[in-house]
Image (cartoon, rainbow, N blue to C red; front, side, top):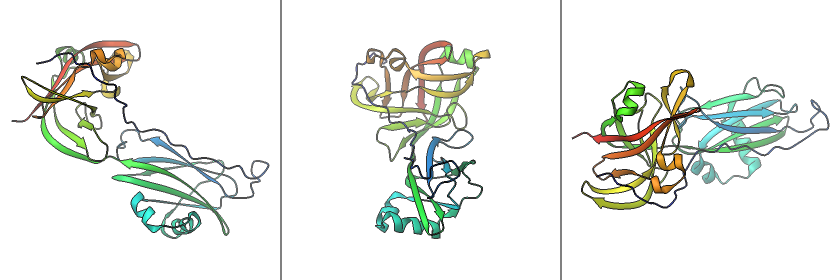
Length: 276
């Protein structure tokens, strides 16, 4: 039975853009004395998989003659117990060369299918002088809970022309309290939600209150463009409207709003029914 539930605020774990620190060398552009590389990390866009594909942009100053990169599990990197200088030598010897990187031309690296915590290190070389920069990437490890059917509210069905979709309820093994309904809006467009830790029991069984942060769907609406979804509590910025529950049986319901940049497209309950 659906009911309003007040809950503590839950901080959504999100993937943040990580920017490496830069070091200035030389006094004029094109006259740098020591090699410097800078690493920027962005969220990969479809058709890439942002959960497991790292999008890294590498910039260099004019002193960089060659550059190399290596992505390896952070636990393995730490187990080597190398100094920064020794690890830079290791990357040059064991990593992959970056071609076409110049002071005027950054290079984009796409590193696919990463699962778990990775360290990505880039080394710029000029003769015997090396400079390294690194960033971290967490590849999400999704595990199945149950298959089933996602049923859109009548409002959503009438606007987007879809009444239901087959999907799989999954949990993330390496991020606490993170769940998704895989590809429920189409390939690459899952519904992610987070557990709040607040639990209870009603006529339908034991449940946990969950939160649906703002996220894109595959839908578009007229000339307004891309459609996003979020729960009503997020929309109203008040947990007085938090009414989403995930049951031990796998059944879920979400009080959600669909919207575009110009405004709301309506709100109602979407549901997930596990296969029997």
